[in-house]
Length: 130
Image 1 (cartoon, rainbow, N blue to C red):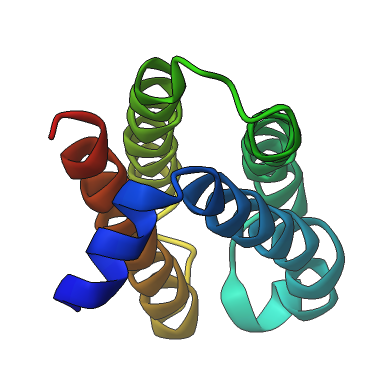
Image 2: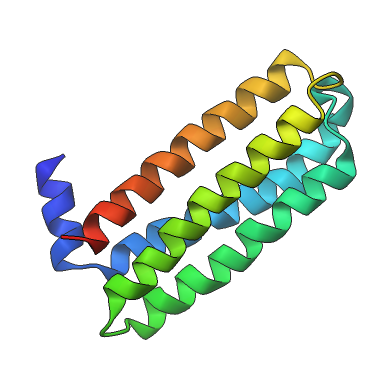
Protein backbone atom coordinates (compact mmCIF):
# COMPACT_ATOMS: atom_id res chain seq x y z
CA UNK A 1 0.00 0.00 0.00
CA UNK A 2 2.86 2.38 0.80
CA UNK A 3 4.32 1.79 -2.67
CA UNK A 4 1.00 2.68 -4.31
CA UNK A 5 0.68 5.87 -2.28
CA UNK A 6 4.25 6.83 -3.15
CA UNK A 7 3.51 6.13 -6.83
CA UNK A 8 0.45 8.42 -6.68
CA UNK A 9 2.48 11.15 -4.95
CA UNK A 10 5.05 10.97 -7.73
CA UNK A 11 2.40 10.65 -10.48
CA UNK A 12 -0.59 12.59 -9.18
CA UNK A 13 -2.47 12.59 -12.46
CA UNK A 14 -3.27 8.89 -12.00
CA UNK A 15 -5.44 9.58 -8.96
CA UNK A 16 -7.58 11.72 -11.27
CA UNK A 17 -7.77 8.82 -13.72
CA UNK A 18 -8.86 6.44 -10.93
CA UNK A 19 -11.45 8.94 -9.75
CA UNK A 20 -12.74 9.61 -13.27
CA UNK A 21 -13.09 5.95 -14.18
CA UNK A 22 -14.77 5.19 -10.86
CA UNK A 23 -17.20 8.05 -11.43
CA UNK A 24 -18.01 6.71 -14.90
CA UNK A 25 -18.71 3.30 -13.34
CA UNK A 26 -21.02 4.89 -10.74
CA UNK A 27 -22.81 6.90 -13.40
CA UNK A 28 -23.35 3.85 -15.61
CA UNK A 29 -24.58 1.73 -12.70
CA UNK A 30 -26.94 4.44 -11.43
CA UNK A 31 -28.35 5.46 -14.79
CA UNK A 32 -28.31 2.25 -16.86
CA UNK A 33 -27.97 -0.86 -14.68
CA UNK A 34 -29.79 -0.18 -11.40
CA UNK A 35 -32.95 1.16 -13.11
CA UNK A 36 -33.38 -2.33 -14.59
CA UNK A 37 -33.69 -3.68 -11.04
CA UNK A 38 -35.75 -0.90 -9.50
CA UNK A 39 -38.31 -3.42 -8.21
CA UNK A 40 -35.58 -5.34 -6.36
CA UNK A 41 -34.07 -2.16 -4.92
CA UNK A 42 -37.07 -0.08 -3.97
CA UNK A 43 -35.25 3.17 -4.77
CA UNK A 44 -37.32 5.35 -7.11
CA UNK A 45 -35.85 5.52 -10.59
CA UNK A 46 -35.93 9.32 -10.46
CA UNK A 47 -33.60 9.27 -7.44
CA UNK A 48 -31.21 6.93 -9.24
CA UNK A 49 -31.06 9.40 -12.13
CA UNK A 50 -30.55 12.33 -9.75
CA UNK A 51 -27.70 10.48 -8.05
CA UNK A 52 -26.15 9.71 -11.46
CA UNK A 53 -25.73 13.40 -12.29
CA UNK A 54 -22.92 14.05 -9.79
CA UNK A 55 -20.69 11.13 -10.88
CA UNK A 56 -21.12 12.27 -14.48
CA UNK A 57 -19.92 15.78 -13.59
CA UNK A 58 -17.12 14.37 -11.43
CA UNK A 59 -15.94 12.08 -14.22
CA UNK A 60 -15.65 15.02 -16.62
CA UNK A 61 -13.76 17.06 -14.01
CA UNK A 62 -11.38 14.26 -13.02
CA UNK A 63 -10.65 13.16 -16.56
CA UNK A 64 -9.98 16.75 -17.59
CA UNK A 65 -7.53 17.01 -14.68
CA UNK A 66 -5.93 13.75 -15.80
CA UNK A 67 -5.46 14.87 -19.41
CA UNK A 68 -4.53 18.50 -18.64
CA UNK A 69 -2.24 17.53 -15.74
CA UNK A 70 -2.43 20.91 -13.95
CA UNK A 71 0.60 22.17 -12.07
CA UNK A 72 -1.56 23.06 -9.04
CA UNK A 73 -2.86 19.49 -8.86
CA UNK A 74 -3.20 19.50 -5.06
CA UNK A 75 -5.85 22.22 -5.24
CA UNK A 76 -7.82 20.28 -7.87
CA UNK A 77 -7.45 17.09 -5.86
CA UNK A 78 -8.90 18.82 -2.77
CA UNK A 79 -11.84 19.94 -4.90
CA UNK A 80 -12.67 16.43 -6.11
CA UNK A 81 -12.07 14.92 -2.67
CA UNK A 82 -14.54 17.42 -1.18
CA UNK A 83 -16.98 16.72 -4.00
CA UNK A 84 -16.74 12.99 -3.33
CA UNK A 85 -17.54 13.54 0.35
CA UNK A 86 -20.49 15.69 -0.76
CA UNK A 87 -21.68 12.92 -3.09
CA UNK A 88 -21.72 10.51 -0.13
CA UNK A 89 -23.75 13.00 1.89
CA UNK A 90 -26.31 13.30 -0.94
CA UNK A 91 -26.43 9.52 -1.28
CA UNK A 92 -26.96 9.09 2.46
CA UNK A 93 -29.69 11.75 2.42
CA UNK A 94 -31.61 10.05 -0.41
CA UNK A 95 -31.12 6.62 1.14
CA UNK A 96 -32.48 7.75 4.51
CA UNK A 97 -35.26 9.73 2.82
CA UNK A 98 -36.43 6.57 1.01
CA UNK A 99 -35.55 4.08 3.74
CA UNK A 100 -39.13 2.83 4.18
CA UNK A 101 -39.33 1.65 0.59
CA UNK A 102 -35.76 0.51 -0.11
CA UNK A 103 -34.78 -3.10 0.23
CA UNK A 104 -31.80 -4.48 2.10
CA UNK A 105 -30.12 -5.13 -1.28
CA UNK A 106 -30.40 -1.44 -2.14
CA UNK A 107 -29.09 -0.38 1.25
CA UNK A 108 -26.12 -2.74 0.98
CA UNK A 109 -25.29 -1.44 -2.51
CA UNK A 110 -25.30 2.19 -1.45
CA UNK A 111 -23.42 1.60 1.80
CA UNK A 112 -20.72 -0.31 -0.11
CA UNK A 113 -20.54 2.43 -2.73
CA UNK A 114 -20.17 5.06 -0.01
CA UNK A 115 -17.38 3.06 1.64
CA UNK A 116 -15.49 2.95 -1.66
CA UNK A 117 -16.04 6.65 -2.38
CA UNK A 118 -15.12 7.77 1.15
CA UNK A 119 -11.97 5.62 0.99
CA UNK A 120 -10.97 7.20 -2.31
CA UNK A 121 -11.79 10.70 -1.08
CA UNK A 122 -9.74 10.12 2.08
CA UNK A 123 -6.77 9.00 0.00
CA UNK A 124 -7.18 12.03 -2.28
CA UNK A 125 -7.35 14.37 0.72
CA UNK A 126 -4.27 12.75 2.22
CA UNK A 127 -2.30 13.11 -1.04
CA UNK A 128 -3.40 16.72 -1.47
CA UNK A 129 -2.26 17.67 2.02
CA UNK A 130 1.15 15.95 2.07
